Amino acid sequence: GLVYPAFNESVHVMSHSSIEQYYKRLSLKASQLTIIEGYDYGLAVPFCYLYGFCDNLGNVFLMDGEYQKEWSVNDHITAIKSIRNTYDADASNMILADPDIFRRKAAGKKLVGKAVSDMFMEEGIMCIRGNNDITNGIVKVNQYLIPQVNHQNPITGEYGMPFIYVSDKLEWWINEISDYYWMKNPMGEQ
Image (cartoon, rainbow, N blue to C red; front, side, top):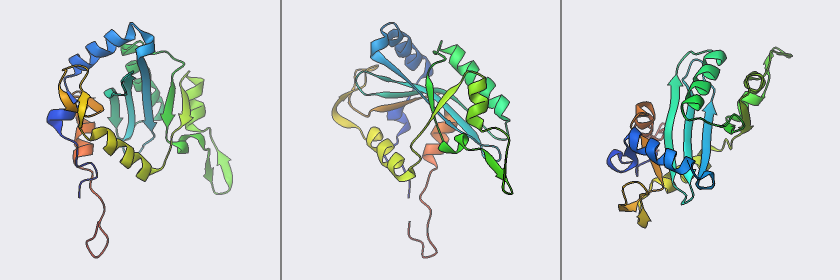
């Protein structure tokens, strides 16, 4: 019933220091590195921010992030800025965000307050709408997780490796992906 059955900690999880060293090496040649950032708002449920990168071979590395429950938008902004500063990220990077942060909320029929994206923009954090199709995302992530016979891990040099790796620093991400199961209907079918 796992949503991501191909995930294997011994294959997909790498030491933070090895991923960070690879990041620094690629940073010297900007054409070999694409920064990827993702954000999902949460108040009663944890908010999630991921900082990672892709190399020019198509490998995805999830390097850092934050996952906290009941934080204010200002706390989200502070955490994002702190992580970006750690890796000297360019403030012009666009964060792929849950499309819901671009909507102003309604109280009854009257719109109130600013959209979260506007609050971010005021702080110099720019976001773009991410694809919110859950099924499409699950399929895509599963494809990155499946080891490929002729694919080489760019850090260890091993063959038969996947296209996605995660830092051991992101324990919450590892726990989430390991415990993500399909829901069952009343008849017990997934």
